[in-house]
Length: 202
Image (cartoon, rainbow, N blue to C red; front, side):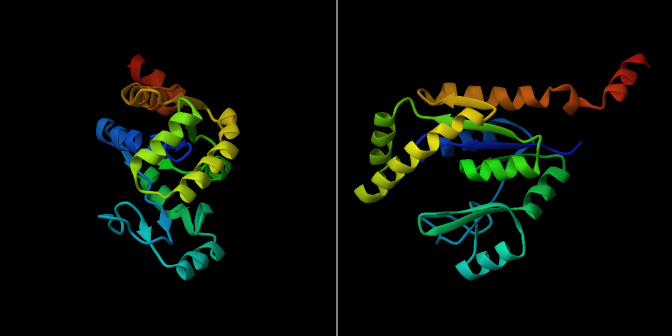
């Protein structure tokens, strides 16, 4: 049976990366979707591991060719998820975890109706700002822009399938893991109904 897509969205600083990394380490058969981006690698990031790094011209040509399920310009850089990457992974029976914004989540749901959407919220905007400042990676201007973006985006959580409030990281990881495991146990994911019954009638 093909794998399923699990989308995690939320404002920068909500803890998405920490939760994604924990889930990948704790759930067998779950892999991360590697997006394309036009930004430069940061720190020890490697091409084909964290992202597929391409220049802006290449990214634009991929847009024109309809290669992306979803793509967006975030500040000065482009990010996108290709059809070929997702279909290759799910076609191998793997469940795929994606970290995209709410617009990207809408596009993924449009093309993959059975995708599962999870929105990650911080306990409060004050705590979110404190986390962003605590990372020490952005200047005040970038932090302000991230906070404004968060305020504008949070309303989107209402149309997601699940909401997790990350007031305690381990609790949030457990909740996200529970969602994935429970979705795997749905009747439709186990086997076609008649096939499932026939297995037990033998």
